[in-house]
Length: 488
Ligand code: BG6
Image (cartoon, rainbow, N blue to C red):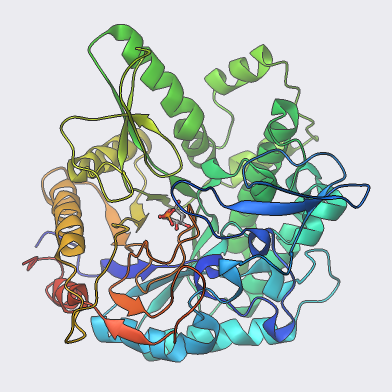
């Protein structure tokens, strides 16, 4: 047998793209609630209010000037507000996951449903009750929840009042939030992820800081995030020694374009800066020497407190988790043809096909990623996001024949199997992204769909929210039933 008996097959979602109910049940505003829709050509935007009351619309990655804040402006469309309404459909959705045979369901808790402002004295009982019901529903279906504690949704109040993660006190707010949910759900949830794609957290929306491209500020905020992660790992183990806690990383595999050593050096540097640094800190418990040198060169001086190094040391993760959608090519040539990818562009790879959104499809790359991570850290691995964002068509008879999605997933599962069976890598689970259709994080579109289940909703929020099974639904059900043996 290739996949272990208890392999965690499942699917993944995130509250800011799936849950909706953005002000229901006492929920507060998160930064994610201030991001408009967009598409491949028109980036998602935020409206900011400057110190003098003037309003300005900017791209979501642009720097927010000091003392300005993101707001919700009535005339705009904000996809997170309703999303695909898990808030009101959770029973139906979890039943569908149960029908597919999910062993696990990756979802995120919305910080602002528990602490609406982030710095509240008391937790919001209605929010806590909502997730109690969600987890109970999962267990009824024999599904083990895998919970992301923070997926791109910082309480807006923390950004406005404290500049989010720049403020060391935000670590304490986060610890309080985690302490609350760990104690409340300690018998319902075993698998936790502290932050989603920690290596993508760099703008006002995620870090809560103004002038986010200022390296000193950005690196200080990231330092606080990594300290918070370590504290949470330790805290979780104290509350329930059976907890398994990880920190999730966006894993883009980089290839040098040619055998020119310069390309390989450039690849090494990009890999270190983009992802290796985060793996190193979470697995080894300290900042690697190449990062310290880089900070020196950038004249960044991190404000630390006595004991911080022990916090990092004591808070190393139990397993490695990552998203994998595509690889990318790094070149030192000026005129190589470009390509897209998960938030990061690279050079075109002539050996790979691309998705409709231009992301290179590289199933074998996943085997490389699994092997390299396992060789380096010898920790169990979970692939907590993977999948194909594609346009789906509803046929006259109501069927949705998403063979392209089946092909993509099949090829990736084959490579995981190879890594497990042939290379001996320890993989705990696989949760393809957006198992039930949800809003795209990158573009804010609905038409970029990943799910086994279709949700009737368009890019502007029109639709009945009715759920319909796609062809991939039955296919994935069979994959799980046969523990990955029957992929046809
Ligand atoms: C990851 C995120 O970057 O990729 C998800 O963790 C996101 O939130 C997913 O949805 C797919 O990206 P996109 O832009 O197609 O939604």
